[in-house]
View 1 (cartoon, rainbow, N blue to C red):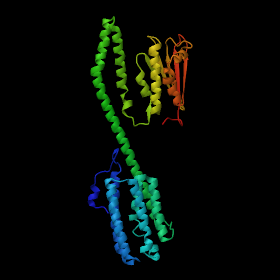
View 2 (cartoon, rainbow, N blue to C red):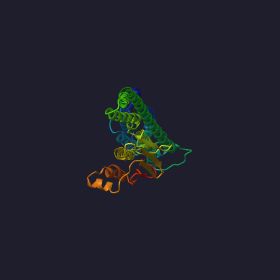
View 3 (tube, one colour):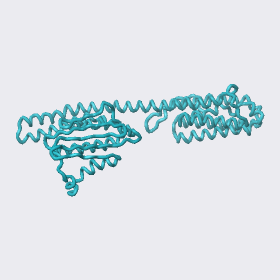
View 4 (cartoon, rainbow, N blue to C red):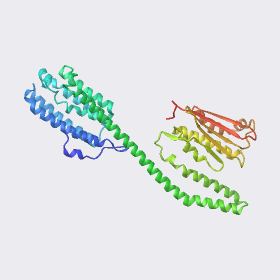
Length: 393
């Protein structure tokens, strides 16, 4: 059995940090102490009425040792806790079953099952803390079923004996408390990660803005003023300045990789600049993180083709549509278009960027990639990815 000092043990630590249910485990061991004291008083009071009082004291000593072991294990968190909970259930059921050995059938029928149903509630609490309310209630039912088996009759007269309701309610309440503690802990950790991410992003943004971006802006400005051969250098500096600004503005996406889904709008908005316009839905377009990354990569490749082949003054327009059962991204440009047979010729020459970087990515997601183009009319990609069960993730 535990003692007064055990209540002040250090919190259980897991790979994710302090166990949010550690205070509940400590409270459970306080209950274990109180139930042991009650069982001790019961043992002293009824020992002379038992059929084998000496054996009863021996079993009570075993009960005491097991209580101490459980308290130490649960408070310090070593060992496989799930296995300990299952072992505790087995030990309690066996000790309750020993009632058939230490007491007569008449005594068993007239009294609560040795070593008291209060002490036998400990595995109900442990199972609820470890596995949740459903398992906690099932464990409570197992304790009650053992109690009925020992007494050799089933009593559902709740007005006379409410032990069944108490056991089930105990498993439900403790299990829900543990679930709530874990959920609140996860939400708090997530909020802390986001807060740290925002702080780091702001620090990085200040650093980049005060240093590299300002230098690139100055180079671009002076290069245009000087003109001549430096104009090309000015244009390169201007492009790098825009790229850095997009990188800083979109850093929040890469800072939290724990989320299963992301807002596609946030990811694609990085691509917007003075030659790329975005038309995005007013509400979030949540998709699986892998799907979002592949769509973003396909859009980036399409925009690269616009910059490389559509002409020096070509502009691109990206439209995102959330259709419920699918997400569609259209990339259209007002460039020179693609001549008939040009794509086939590029494939024969070994240039397979379009088939691999755009079509291949979308097809691997179970979607489709369609290209519409005419000479002098620009090009348009229509990328469509179906949702799984109506929502990605």
